[in-house]
Amino acid sequence: MKIYYDYKMISTDTNYTFYLDDKPLSAIYEDGKGFLIEFTMPDHDVKLEVKTDNSMEALSTEESSTEAPEGVDSPVTDGSDPVTVAYASDVKEKPANTVSVNLATGDTSQSLVFEASREVKNVQFMKLTIFDVDLDGNAKFQYSIAHEEDAISPDKALQVDVTFWGDMPEYGIAYSDPATGETKYFVVIVSGKDGSVSLDPIKKDYLSTTIPDDYNNPNGPSPSSTGADAAISCYQDIIYMYKEAQTNGSIDYTLWESLNMYTCLEGYGWPQRDSNDEVTYSIYDINKDGTPELIISFYGYIADIYSYNGTKAVEALTRSYRDSITIYDDGLVKLESTDAATASINWYELNPTIGEFLPTVQDLITLNDDGTVKEEAYYRFAADGAWDEIEQAYKQNGNLPVWAYEWGGDITYDEFYSRASSGSIVKDFPEGGLIMEFNGF
Image (cartoon, rainbow, N blue to C red; front, side):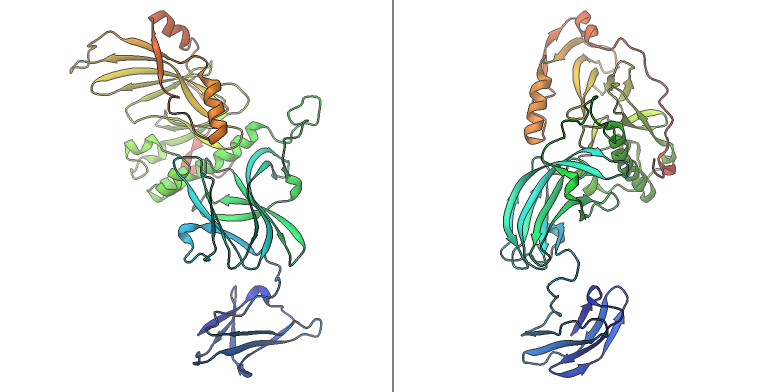
């Protein structure tokens, strides 16, 4: 049998001697792991013991008596945080008393499992909304408590099903640690590299149940970060995802789908094709609200647009590889589509609350086999007043209503163009760069 005496429990000025049933055991120290102890397990209960000798501080002797010891028990606290998080699919065996809670709000969800190496109490699972970033890069969150447990322990884990809507932190956990007397707070972090989850400690000062009254108040203290700063911070991770896919020649579909991301570049054979060094990024404020959007282009043609909804970056608009996107300086965006039977022009406007472009009017025509117009074009519009209802539904469950893209009645040619853009086409976006050359803002 092999057992590691955890390196986090080892002091450099202490001598360690290990015993099995009072007989000395040899041990080899391995960096990053600790002392490796090897022995043959007899057919009876054993006593595994460590004795220490330290002129500065004597550590307590630890004993373990068990039918099949898995390792040396941890002390009451070794200074490490007792709670960890992982995807349920990565947990080999959950404790029998695992509590399951479903807080997912979208079509896709992930199951997070929180396990504790020792009992912690007053466990609170939190939903987070970022509202500021200070000059040192520390995010400030508004939080609400979505679920509470009296305690979790080695025998009782907490599994929470959630929906991740972007790459900004959206969830956190707090608990009281009886071993230290502290209440600790953590943010659930999703890695932009491999999609793994971890817990990042955060000070209570950066959590608030409400957004301070003086935030965005022109007569009060200025926020230390604007929506533009937060947006650009979010876009950085997205650009790195494109870069990683391009570098690897493949997309991590599990990660991209978990973030509700899809790129029309796939229709061009990206990221496998050799000419993918023509994929570029630009930062441009389409609707002139002070928060810019991220534009991904291919050979100069707009492919995907991302926006920031005040909490996270979301994919605002993409197209099929046969479509084209045009941005106008009055904030409207035109999407032109053609297939074998129809051609259409759809005009969109960005809804900053949900971070997506919603349709305003549509021009649809039917084609003959040779591509000529079979029937006169007709024009339709999105229902008036729908935005308020859409925003309310989105705030309640994080989803767009199923009718969000439905069209209203027919309108005339003049009515159609009264709702379409009268602005100028934006041809030159602020300089961005090649995805492959991106190394952060």
